[in-house]
Amino acid sequence: MNKALRPAVIAGNWKMNKTRPETKALLNELLPLVKDATCQVIVCPPFTCLETAVSALAGTNIKVGAQNCHWADNGAFTGEVSAGMLFEMGVSHVIIGHSERRQYFGETDETVNKRVRAALDAGLGVILCVGETLSQRECEITGDILALQTKIALMGVTGKELGRIVIAYEPVWAIGTGRTATAEQADEACGGIRGVVAGLYGDSAAGGLAIQYGGSMNAANASELLGRPHVDGGLIGGASLKPADFAAIVAAACQ
Ligand code: PEP
Image 1 (cartoon, rainbow, N blue to C red):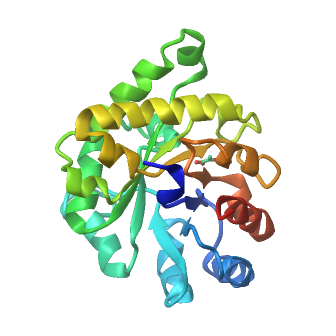
Image 2 (cartoon, rainbow, N blue to C red):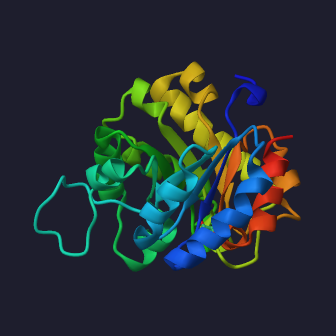
């Protein structure tokens, strides 16, 4: 499928930043800047600010995502939040498998898959993160790692459910480091992931899947990255906390 027929998706991962008043202020500044965006725009504040964001963005073109969810519906999982709780609050998406969750919180491909399943069952859209470490890239096993992470994460996901998934290719070495993948590297990796998805679900489903690049994307490098045939959007960390920069990335995706 032609890239122009796929939805571009720009999502902001705020990580552990912003209080509720700060959330309101950031969104008030961002809203007028992206109100005419033709691509999908999602902001992902911390759990404590989700309700604030949902009410501030009601009736607008910006959707709200969470940064994680647990796989159980409820129960004795202190500190966790279920997918159903997010859906009930009006959250539409959830980031799953971010490398910081894998690195600092023991997330594995298997728990990523359980969380993906739970999110889909609850009615949420999923931003599924995959990506290689620097040593894996240097060992030239990037394609194998991306294939493994993608295949395990999508276990038990039907072709129809794939329509609620966006995959974010995020090389671990590029996240929060200021070191961006080249447009060629990003396109090659996103194209490789699309090939893996085609093997699982067929060419048509893979052709309709939005695959984002994430890793130090900013207002200056967005156009080049987003101009590549397999890069359908971005998962943005640091730059998503600056409304003008985030809006510039949205504008680059809407061209
Ligand atoms: C991220 O957190 O997903 C990310 C891409 O961060 P940054 O843009 O800051 O590298």
